[in-house]
Image 1 (cartoon, helix red, strand yellow):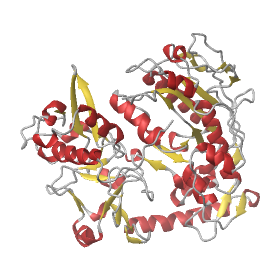
Image 2 (cartoon, helix red, strand yellow):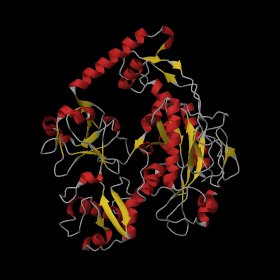
Image 3 (cartoon, one colour):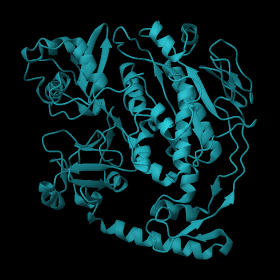
Image 4 (cartoon, one colour):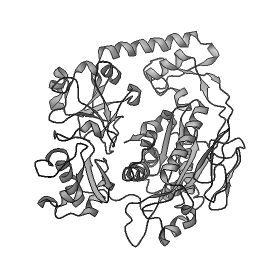
Length: 548
């Protein structure tokens, strides 16, 4: 569908507008005479009336907000008037930035918190700590930086990565917040806005990966955890321990052990799905089809193409493993264990959205929300009848509800399919309810579900932008995904191209209709399964996770 555009260079007028908006909305609105509210919003018309902005119009602003990879801005409409704000980074006293942010209530919400800086500042940081400087907050990224990816909350060329002990800092009274584009912020503790080195977990050289500073308590804790793993392994029966020196089992232990726990058999309440919409039943959630007919528990649903397949169904997992509490705690402290990998659920998605070959559709809206669920080995999760566990849900667009002829021909999605479907908020709610139930039955959490895409458009651009434009809150687990192209290029040392090209290079047949979301998702699942079979195992795949 032409989902991704080409990388923009610095001569692109959108880049110039983005920089001008960042400057004005973060630092200069008041001094330029543009009224700015305490929540950071300014009227777009007031901005475009300034001499510096007269070469741009509202459509240019829309495009910048939609295409900005770091999601720096929020655009909204109130009583027919367009307003825009920067999501964080303000220095103006007129803006109460904390009104823009969500309060972080628990350290568990941000298990990783990283600040990027430059080597020339390290001596001062090592002595005094991080400082918010002229800004209202210190900025952090809520995850590990990945080579080559766009990062919100950190410049891509930072030399030094400072990892923060969020639990210790919060216990000392440090407040943390999360912005709309998933940047973590804190005002620090002192009047100068400092976060002292005592709250650092470690500091890493981003160029070579060397640890150049480590909190004394963290060192002692790591040593204690390695000893704890050793003691646990000694207590387990010999038959339950398989000696293994691979670094992906217990990365910190020189003599590693793969723990084999008891098999946990789980029963399930099966839920049938046809399209969008949901009602509660005694068995769980029942999703109602686009044509009004509901499917009963444990049945299969008919999609728009006439084929029958199981949708969003509960599953019995005979491979889930349970370890003793002390063993699992030790494993989580030392690295990604085999047990944790087995809990992984891969959710393969490929959205279809409104499109036209005659004119630009703005804003685009999702019209199909498919998911194919796989276990950690890449095999399909299955329902009680043995059918693959997947979802094909149509979504009703509301901004431009009529599909173009081009869109219908490309996707095979018909006008009445979307007319009778639910809107995106309703589909997200039903999907979240099912995913939560599925993970609970497997003994997994939302940290264990990883979305898989072909490209970054689906979860870096399409879903966040539509949710932002329509002021929709969506589950945070949609902010983590693996772009299947990256492990493909690493493993096979050749350019991925598109989905069809990857399938062809691996001698895999393209099944179904290309550009129909559920069929594309099944084909992407096939690629993921092949990657795993050829040696790119779950532990490696999890290192490819991107986050926003």
